[in-house]
Length: 104
Image (cartoon, rainbow, N blue to C red; front, top):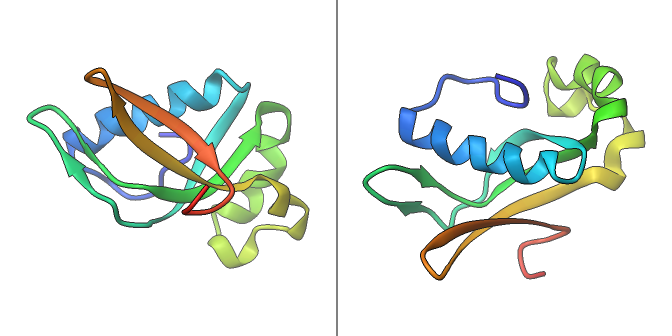
């Protein structure tokens, strides 16, 4: 699955698909680095804030070369797309937004 390296639970994969749907609306792919806490769980889904890179589709091929080796190998040229994927529920619907840090 693009942007995700480790096997995850079915509940997390449902969350991940929502992250990628939000990324696709920005013509991008979200690549996971690490979890940042602020967990949630419902009967169908589980997730948390995630740090990673929101990479424009046209830059994905170049980005993946380093990312597949580990976050230490991601080129500095991708610092501008390093973000936090944050979740919230609005009127019972999951909303994903991308922020530059935990407090924004």
